[in-house]
Image (cartoon, rainbow, N blue to C red; front, side, top):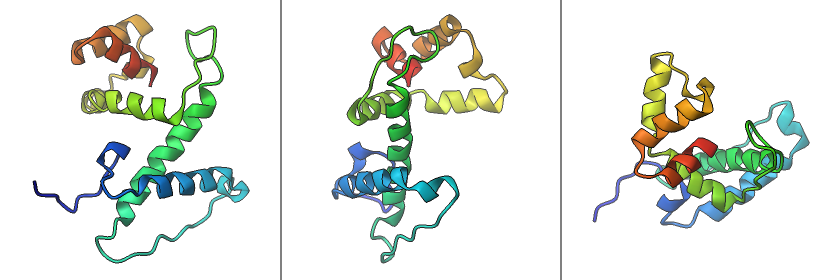
Length: 141
């Protein structure tokens, strides 16, 4: 098998073990008080050493850290919270990636699926994935 020098975007693609460093960096950034005002971080390395891959993973982890915190409160139609771990969110993200290009297409045509009624949105998602469980995961993500 041949590998390209295309940067990775998710943990499942991390064959070189950069995810732990990326998660540590994301947690450090997440707890910085100056992060709310803006700051700069330098990531130095040779060409091809994985800087962009680390940045992609850090961004993904920052999103998931925020989503993890938000999961401790009920959202939308829910009456109770459904706390999620980072591992849960990574699995949900992988399911979401199945429909992400289609959602992007809808956005280009100004059809915002996120604002559709829950039932209509879920049925649209269900058409795109292979089962009800995956549609539930994608909708929740």
